[in-house]
Image (cartoon, rainbow, N blue to C red; front, side):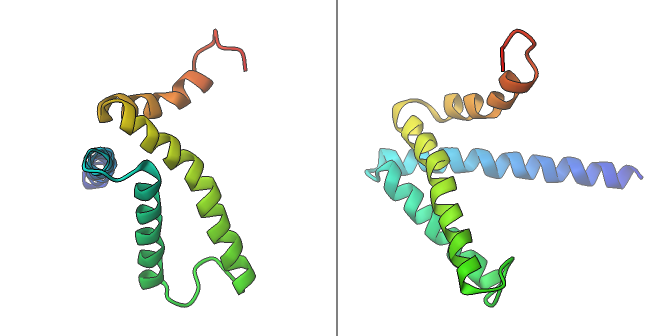
Length: 116
């Protein structure tokens, strides 16, 4: 039982570490001349190619139409989030952006004085 809890803590630490590294990496790319849009495009392209290596035939789709819908959802859904994140990284420090992003859910759901 103790190993199971330790495993979850290691997975959480690994997840937070990789997530933090993406902020730092994006900030460095922007400082070296890439625009937030270019960073998003390359990140999306690498993720899409990676999914093709994991599942070259099908992953959650039954047809090319479903594949196109999922691609459109990734482009349009992810683009709003990553565009705003990358633009914020262009303006301020990575630690500020990550702190704001990770606390947004707390301010919306857990503070009683905010009207929903």
